[in-house]
Amino acid sequence: MKIPTFYAVWLLVLLGAYAAQAQDDGPRQLGTLPAMPPPAKPRAVPAPRQLESVPVVPTDTTRRAAVTAPLPAPMPPAAPVYAPTPAGQLPGNNARPPRFQVGLKNGMVYTANDVETKNPLFGRSYLLLDGQRKFDLTEIGFYEDETGHYVRTTLPNSSREATLRREKTGRISLYSITTTQYSSGPGGFGYPSYGGFGYGGYGYGGYPYGGYRTIKTEYFSKDNGPIQNLTSNNLMLATKDNAGAQQLLLESRRYQQATVASYLVGGGLLVAGLMQSLRATDGRATISPLVYVALPVLIVPIVLQSKQANNQRQAIALYNSAR
Image 1 (tube, rainbow, N blue to C red):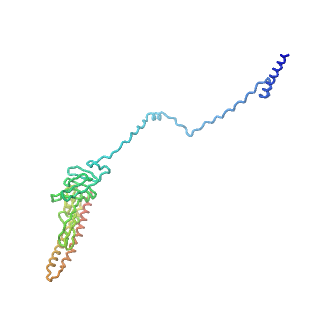
Image 2: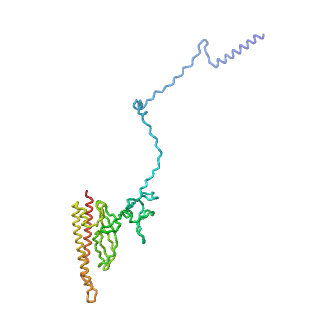
Image 3: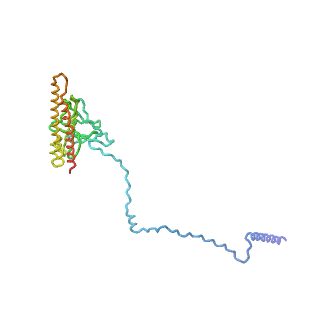
């Protein structure tokens, strides 16, 4: 019969499928619950990390300070800086600061890096500032250059104006003027100029003839007053409130008197000796012994005048240092 055969085949197919599933799942008892899978292992939770320091809890004061503290203002961009131009400075000379000043008698003051004194053969002398501007010396009150500070003023007992170099500053300031003169005296020995008696107020020529000599005549000014001749008498009037300076100037006056006496004695001996030499009647050129005696006598004023100058300088320094 065909129908039972069909059922037999279908039963064999079911039995085969069941056997294959039994091999995959392993043996299992019937009537029992299926085994539950093992629970998953819990993951280890890391312990909380300890901080090195306890954080500071902000207080009301710190919050208020943080809120009320103004923010710094932004810095403005740097502006270019320009060096100020001194009053009276000539144009085109701003590369370096000016070194010298030139003051006019009208009160104007100019600054310059180069000041030259020009003495043309024809025409009047003038100052040239930085090679650009000229000023006649009659307009100048004072000026500076590489050699020092100079003033233009009228000399004592004179109506002419001269340029004096400032040697020392203080309550008593020293000024000097240097001139070259020709000495035609016997032996070329020059005599001091007592109108402005100062240091180096004598010189020598070539014996027995005259010659050129350089005379440095010094003047002084007290408290920026008028220029006066540098003599012991004038200094004693200017320093009468200082006993130490007065004592030094008394000694200087004695040296001055001895200097005058030495010049008179030496000059007299020299003239007498030359007269005797010219009166020689034997026809031979002879030199009188008085000439040889006069020479050392005429050298004595050199030493005496040096001592006089030292005393005057010490008196001025003492007076300037006193309060």
